[in-house]
Amino acid sequence: MTDPEQIERWRGVLARLRRGPAPRGEEFDLCREVLAVAPATTHRRTAARRLLEGAMADAGTSIADAQEVMALLKALDTGDLEIGRLLTER
Image 1 (spheres, rainbow, N blue to C red):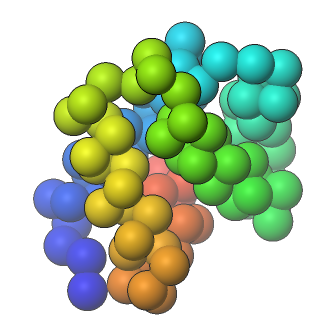
Image 2 (tube, rainbow, N blue to C red):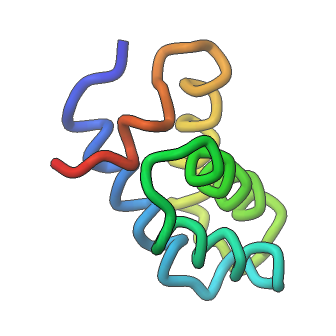
């Protein structure tokens, strides 16, 4: 199970990725737009996941954020975290 402090830290990482510049590219710019305007839908969850995955492939992602993203993706893949928890208001 993921503790509230970790979730807040991961929300911060996702917020930084939403501001950019990493990951770079049209696909990720579109993900940012979807995250900004879409209600809590599958599209929003997919955009967040894609942004996280893209961060791992972009050399502009800081090492600290990359380490957090890897832990976050692992938590998502093992079912310890549902991505919607990162997208909900505090």
